[in-house]
Image (tube, rainbow, N blue to C red; front, side, top):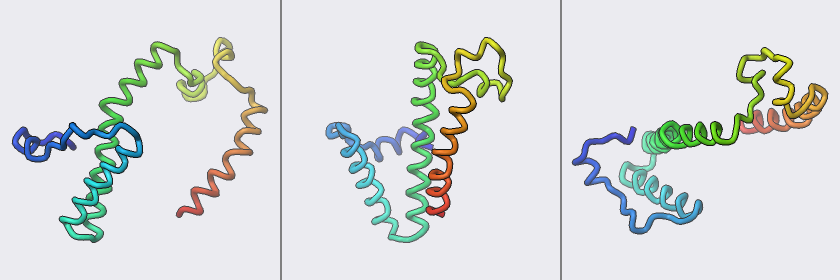
Amino acid sequence: MPYVDSQAREKLQVSTLRCALTTGGLTYQLTQIVSGYVARQGLGFDALSEAVAALECAKLELYRRIVAPYEDVKCAENGDVYASAIRTGGRLEASDAADIAVDEADLAILLRRTLPPLLEQAYDGA
């Protein structure tokens, strides 16, 4: 996790003077940091695995601390997009009908069209 002591933070501080302004720029900066780490550690499984783990942990911490609370605020402001049947584990009440955007036939068609390509992609990558 990113919670290192203040002395380590001072040594590891990345300059914010040239902070990326685009997604591509941010991706480039992250790639440069990871490339530097791997170069110093030596190209090998351990260094690559550690780099991936660090990126994943940073991603998860960003999501946990920033994204999820932001989404909770937007959900409260704009209303939940998930039907209560999903939120309640499948128990559907008559008053929930307005929350459901598609009927069962539409859902069946949607699943038949989308699941096979998704499963095919998942197994092709394995």
